[in-house]
Length: 419
Ligand SMILES: *Cc1c(COP(=O)(O)O)cnc(C)c1O
Image (cartoon, helix red, strand yellow):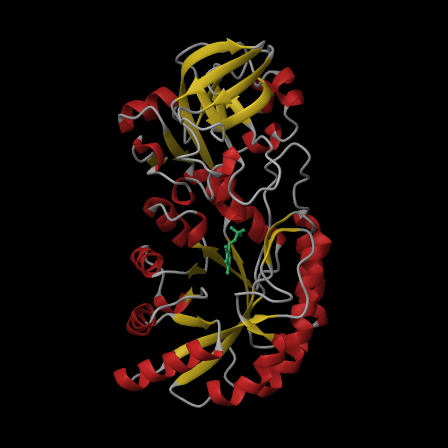
């Protein structure tokens, strides 16, 4: 669609072209699932909302499957976007789901995903959540020796068994991740140095050890770093496999990142795919008969979502033009730069009804909240704004509505729709 978008807009925001590729443009108007912002607004009776594109979700998974070895199983991490219709759509596209709370477990089950393809991880599972996992029959990813013993006791009480995986905190880390979740002192998983000593205990019923899980980090855009941690993970598996007769799967984690910001280079999926083909051949003996799992969140859903809000006011202050919208950090914390980012940078943004217009002067786009943190875009080059314009934040399909403080300032919850 980029031929219909004004070139000055594309050059002002280097990451815009790729972010727009999932959507269509009709008469300068951004369309999500074939609908204009005004049409979606009429459907929802809302002037600020997240819209997700069903076809974009489908294309993303298809392209990924095309590049990866055919034997690799894809899991969706529900945390990235737990909106019911999105979870149901993902259930039809992926092989399994990863959940980390009772609500996420129920969402995954109700999406139609079989319990045996759902894994329940997370460092603070209560007895009540473990009991729910046992009752549902999903795979429990154990994050500590204590949790393993609690689950054993619960199984004995319920006179049942449970299939489990051990989440390992390996000695190595995933370099260049936005968030590191392994290597060194971490709340996640069981230290590699402690895992071997637990193998006898975990394999004495009522638990059945069927997998291992490593998750080293998120938001990584470096193919070689991802492949290196996969290689190190497979080397560790070589030592573990002979000690675990019932093993069925090995979860390599994920970490595939999204190019949100101007300087970000997209993850080279060709390189990841080729590298994984090579690794799985090299370690063929180690993984024979095992399912190899990748668990991805944002990579699968970020591109498919747009956060749309409306321009309420425009004013100048000390020479800067401020565009005030009815959307802000209460709905989209990550876009404001307050969800784990060290330095605030702009997401790809648009005036969704002015795609074919050239850029004018730089704008400060802010939300309605009484805090200087409520920034939607800082010094961004957009067309001349008008009150009533639709302001769109792209790459917003992950860590949006559910990862934002929707109660803050009491404006009310944001609407969502899958089209
Ligand atoms: C958060 C998380 C994911 C998903 O992370 P993304 O960056 O969205 O891909 C997957 N697995 C585990 C264990 C997680 O904690």
